Amino acid sequence: MKLNPELLKSQKSWPAVMYVCQELQSRGHLAYLAGGAVRDALLGKRPKDFDIATSARPHEVEQIFQNTVAVGKAFGVIVVIVDGPNDARVSLEVTTFRSDGDYKDGRRPDSIEYSTPEKDSERRDFTINALFYDTKTEKVIDFQEGLQDLLTHTIRAVGDPVLRFGEDKLRMLRAVRFAGQLGFKIEDTTLAAVKKLHHEINVVSPERVTDELSKIWQSQDALYSFMLIQQTGLAHHIFRGFSFLKSEKWLKFYQLGLDQIARDAEFGWRWLAFCEMATRVKEKSAWSAGAAEILKVFSNFKLSRDLLASIDFSLRNYSDFEKRDTEALLLLDHRNGPALLQVASLERKLLGQVEYYENFVNRYRELSGTNGFLQTAFLNGRDIETLGVGKGPIVGELLKGVYKAQLEGVVADREAALEWVRAELHRHAL
Image (cartoon, rainbow, N blue to C red; front, side):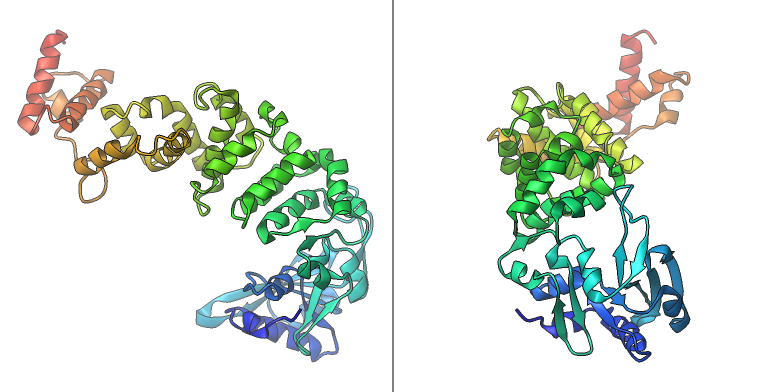
């Protein structure tokens, strides 16, 4: 298995990578590419990020390069910042070869010891991530038979998988993520270790779990990853707000809708669509019976305040949106309306009602202006007040009512709208 150097050289940050490696090498230090970049290049993919492993100690790296940040100096990690093309700056993690001590917190080693490339490879999570690439000789360095596992499409822990997962519990979720992302199978002993230790995923922070789940959604085969999450027992702890996960039936609903979920959409919206399908296992409306359960699950993850507000908007307004009336048009005009439409449409597609919202969306477009939003209202609050209506909730109610009449074609201009309001005031003796 050979690595095509052109895949590396085609990246904008490659000159910066070569500069850092050459500077280290010219001073007698080893400097290799490490981890995911080597794996991806061997698979014929363009690496997104580059990490460099070196024999230079952290203080030596700081002495060699002018612009550095000691983000993890205690663990041998220094970020080197290099000027890139078009005044851009490239940040590269440069890590000293090391061996790790015990991991008492299930995430970081309590101590480290600077070591050799071979010893450094022994601390890494999976064999396919334990590869190095010497930019000087353009050769791949493999101490853990990672090349063979790449050829056989295998995810295998380095050394004893129980020890590897005990060191950093998130590695269990990373294993199923890589399986879906790369289309690989998890080696039997490694998979058995995940099933044995699945409950320990509870010690991992919600932020780290959310980040991994977000990457899973964008995987080549996200369904495969979710099946593994279910089969290994990880689902019980990660999605602990969902009682239905005791059944595998939810996977069928997920599979039906997977292709309808935008891979580049925000994590929360993809997850909301997933929840909508999953709660159908109960044969009840996800939005009425399952809303509280969905929100419980969201509380387990660290999502942005804006995204949570958007999700809350969809859950609260879904039943009204289903009516496809003028009220629903106003919901669609909301900044979160398009996302609500996407998720609502997904449910109808699963029911075989592909065209359920088609006429409704066409009507919205017909009533929309060139800016893509509904036509401007004929009246505003001041217009209502000029008719003798005092300030208060009644103004908003009248504005909403007359705007609905405008959208329904009952009033055709400003004067007709004012007349509609006068009639309402007279009818209710206001």
